[in-house]
Length: 252
Ligand SMILES: *Cc1c(COP(=O)(O)O)cnc(C)c1O
Image (cartoon, rainbow, N blue to C red; front, side, top):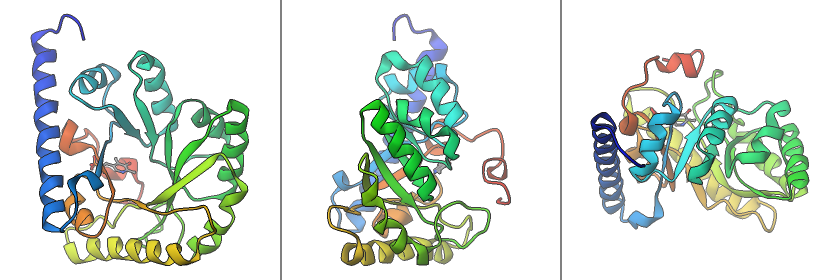
């Protein structure tokens, strides 16, 4: 950025400091679990953070950003198109919005329907591009959460080779919102077991090496159970103005 104001300078330092703290915690959690720090990717989650602030976040080192709403992601990707940010859509997608995602996103982490897979594939073919995709699993058994029930994942992934523009990378989940660590951990363990099962059962050519799980409140626990991507918002950008129940109806 050119000509930073003192306020921008302060925001830049704040985001840099938070990023460094989160990254240090990730590295420590890896070490504790006997894992390579490079095996965990930090995806900064930028929902509700203004495009102006994201320009500062980019300067602080955020080269990819996760958004849960397609409309918000799309607007930001347009305003910030000069920065070459990699956009990851991490929230539910309606079939009729697939065409937008196919234009700007680098990754989609919330695939849970074949209708969306088919529409995305068609739109990606039109755009002449491919997309990294994670299959979302509802590991907490909460009706308010999107994602496939664990018992449906195997049949679901067997259909995915039909959609050649989708590069299947792995699984994504939101753990239960609970202060009870055992219940949170249970969700992550369930995901690791599904990943193991898919290593045997998934069609040739599909790999499920990535596990996207863990957010500001539980990323260290997720790393202990095998997360390769953690999606962290508030620990980098500060508390969101609205409670989680606003973003995930029925929760919080
Ligand atoms: C908001 C969000 C996150 C990050 O949550 P924080 O509490 O801000 O870390 C992760 N995953 C998804 C799908 C989200 O919508």
